[in-house]
Image (cartoon, rainbow, N blue to C red; front, side, top):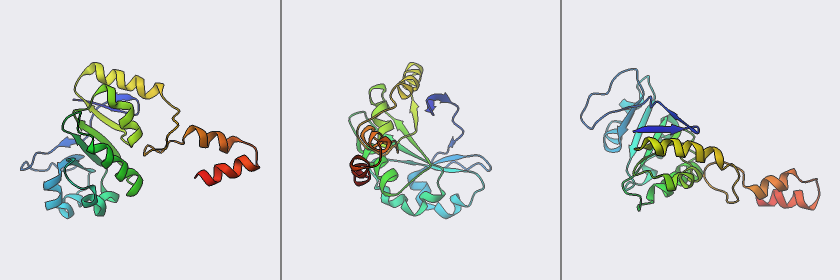
Length: 177
């Protein structure tokens, strides 16, 4: 699979570790959720970055105690019709304040890329080369949005109000925060 991050196709530096496979030393690893939770203290004590592959059937609250030490959370879209990972992404970004890499994996479709960005995802595993290139272009194309969401971008109205001169309009901008 190709990885899109920062509006471009990049090499994935994380090694996926299967449930029973040995964890390699000194390289970033992506661990399945059940294995991570079973040995979280030992896995997080490693010298290299750690990521967790989190299914959409688990509550992200289970990750809360570890988020400040995780470099990556990969949320799974088992099918394009199952949007629970969108809710998980928003919770991780907005409620738990996760600032590491938030990756969409599984059935990641071209039509949903911008919505995934808006939910807080910043990396995407895609199956088709053409989708990776199309997403990189779409991420560059759309830079202004009207709705506030988990991606941290300022909505257009608030940006306009903050640029306004001091007075009633600026006061309105402050109350919109």
